[in-house]
Amino acid sequence: MHTLWFREHNRVARELSALNPHWDGDTVYQEARKIVGAELQHITYSHWLPKVLGDPGTRMLRGYRGYNPNVNAGIINSFATAAFRFGHILINPILYRLNDTLGEISEGHLPFNKALFSPSRIIKEGGIDPVLRGLFGVAAKWRAPSYLLSLELTQRLFSAAYSAAVDSAATIIQRGRDHGIPPYVDFRVFCNLTSVKNFEDLQNEIKDSEIRQKLRKFWYENPGVFTPAQLTQLKQASLGRVLCDNGDSIQQVQADVFVKAEYPQDYLSCSEIPKVDLRVWHDCCADCRSRGQFREVTQESQKKRSAPYNYPDEKDMELSHLRSRQQDKIYVGEDARNVTVLEKTKFSQDFSTFAAEIQETITALREQINKLEARLRQAGCTDVKGVPRKAEERWMKEDCTHCVCESGQVTCVVEICPPAPCPSPELVKGTCCPVCRDQGMPTDSPEKR
Image (cartoon, rainbow, N blue to C red):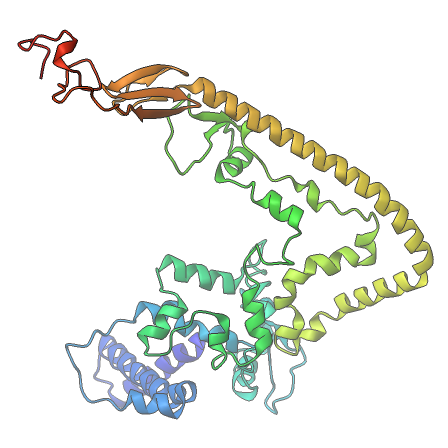
């Protein structure tokens, strides 16, 4: 399209120059630029937008009624960052290249990811016409809630230019966070739609109950995402542990790196920071991977991106994978009896190993807890005035307040005074409870207050 409009500018400029040979080059350029800009505006608002917005949206748009200096001509952030990204779901996973009778050219069609960063294909494989015919001669990707972004955009984007492909969907989501775009539920209220509190409130917009159910499964604590043992280990994770494991040479961090701590007394060795024990992800069945059983489990989380939820033509692209899975099933069927016996024996052995490893993990965690408790007992405290206190140290904060440093924490207790045995007790400096005069305290004592 860039090449097309570049050529349109030059075509208009040549005609204007022929019509007005007395114009200089700058006049020709600026007038051609103005004409092409007007063409783009007219086509966008009169031909393209009505297809996107439909009749109700077109009526709301209305016609041009003159320049209004009080209207902000900028693009609203929520539109540029979120709403206008709807165009990504219209992209075909195949770049169709058609000849002048709308048949496939001899070089064939292209997977979308193979067409990016490949200008040589235009130069050597028919020019821009086959690609342009594919754009106007083939329908856009079907818009349906059950079809997500094409795999070409989520798993293969820019793979021809980079060693790792880019996930367009993830990029769009993160861009929205970077720009501070409010969540969907807030925009519903802003646009005078009903507020939503659960996924069933979306049944008018997302009519397919299976899709609503898929949205419920994003969170890591949902049943079936991880086993209970795996979930327990994941809750050992901390940013401090990640820093220890992946920094260049970090040896000490505080227990909670989101809270500033005093060095060195409040810092821990990395060996004392709990870690996620990946042994609970150990595949107990030695030959499961070769038979496809392990793959069946691990790919459950990727189903939302698999062929049935993308453009139908992509099913052919997954054909080799489906054949592989079929061969896996045949293998299991042929040796079912032998495999069953072997698996029972192997399972018994693996479970014993697994139980022993869990016991080791529990013992290691207990040791870490004991070390932390011992460190807290030895660390001492700092009182409200900033005075360092030793472990088990006791002191008077005020006349009636006793404090003690225990397990790295200051605990203060206010003394409760018993009822005075005289009608007019007096409070004396250095004592907590009021005293009676007849206990030997002179009335003119300088200690009295």
